[in-house]
Length: 213
Image 1 (cartoon, helix red, strand yellow):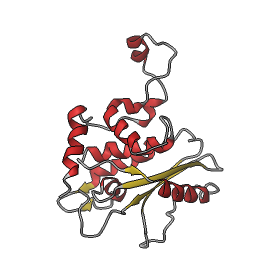
Image 2: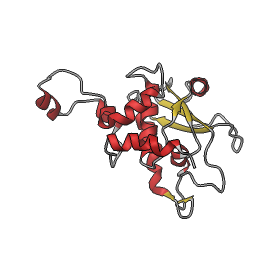
Image 3: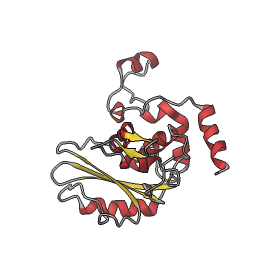
Image 4: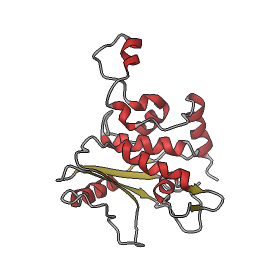
């Protein structure tokens, strides 16, 4: 058991209702017509999508010192913690060391945007999720990557502790892995106009024979 977890999760859940779905990352790109009408603030930018669950956003900001309200690192962390909250898992903290490693690997992929891991197969020293967004997709954001990974949750069977036949779910299980405590990510726009994003996790998840939560 981890005694601090119930207290922290209660502070998150009791103060703010859990959203049934993850807010679309694209929601930050344009304000809905009703926002300006409701607030009388025509022409002003829409509040960030994080405001849809301000408690998770504030908890993530506290665990991401120096990230800044609009930094990509905070966006990565927020969406990770929103997914973890749905499984009652303690929020992840931001790791500058792993973010530095992720930036290094993203820089290696700038020239080709190849969907390749930084570790040889079976030799992962850190957990790692990677994402590729097609050419002309400079608008691909951290939330798009995390939501893409999280969508694999529908293909994970807790009873069998396995993915559905022919499906992938390891990106999702790494996000919600109960023993993982920190994450560091990076995003780069590749030379061909695509986007490559990578996140590293410690301790790594997806341990054979163990359940994620």
